[in-house]
Image (cartoon, rainbow, N blue to C red; front, side):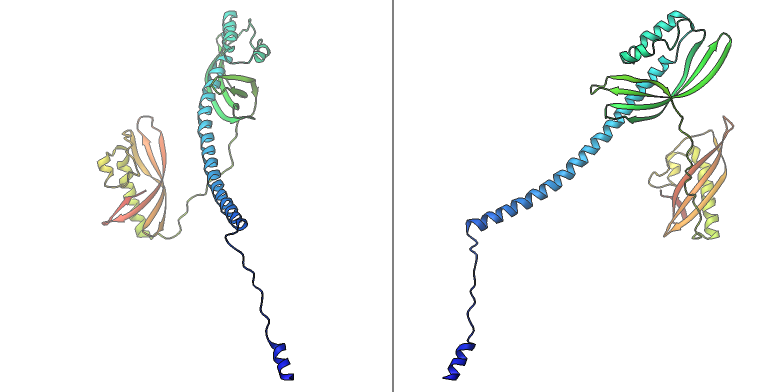
Length: 301
């Protein structure tokens, strides 16, 4: 009796297992929601990238076009604004022409910039555009430019050069107007940037260096007058186009830095030519890739 009770106590109990019916509407709905969400996320990812890329491309192309038009508009405006003769009719003509460039407020503001009884004359020799940048919106531009003028006072003539900034608004249809009077500003100064100079790394032997120097001297002596056929003996892949500068006479290799990477030699070369017409010494700089094939060096890039 005791033994039977023990066996009954040790008999394992069956576990209850619950299974979900995959055909229930709730389960199907959840799976559909998951699949749709995943598909939507993938779609948004690809379309967002494509849209962003196209948007950037359109902006770059438009800026290039706008800059060209704005530069021409400001250049023509400056030639009119800074040119006059020392008489009443010339000043009146200048004022009338400026209405095609200035807003009405600026026309009133600048009406007396050149008096009708001005004693000197001014002619513009050059207008140089330094920068054109968007100013607040894609239709507004800030322009920095230099004007070189010749001022005549009787027989006396002086040349002056000044830097100004102005603002231009451009309509979507391309029409433009000056919205800021030419305002004195600073001229961009020389940068302190110095590029890293090429240095030899000891990978070229003295014999190779001499051999390459002989090749370069031969090539650059021929280069100014070489035909395409002649260049093909020294150059592959069109890396050195024909220049046809018959007035250039080779003087020397001013400097040469050679380094090797595998079977390719990089050559940083400064070549000195004499312009036989102007008698000026011309320095031309080249970055070349050289390879040796069939016993001869060749420029490959």
